[in-house]
Length: 92
Image: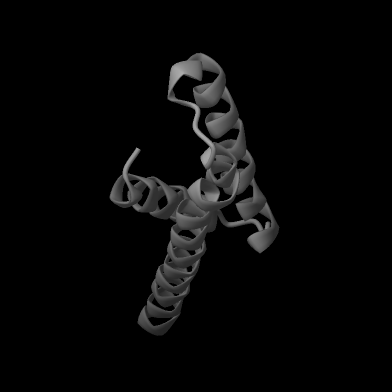
């Protein structure tokens, strides 16, 4: 996966996780890096011919980008939801 694809997937995950009504907080965003570590582990197990000396760094840097994008998407979703709730309150 490219960095842009990781950023896009992370942002979408953040938007989805930030939009529910219940107060789940930022804690659910730990799902994103955990899922990416599992993805890297599975990918490396399926492609042993592509393992190199720096493949261990994949466990650090591959989860980094989607996690940052998910955090940004989470707060964008929260801000959108707050502005919608505020507008509904102003209309009544």
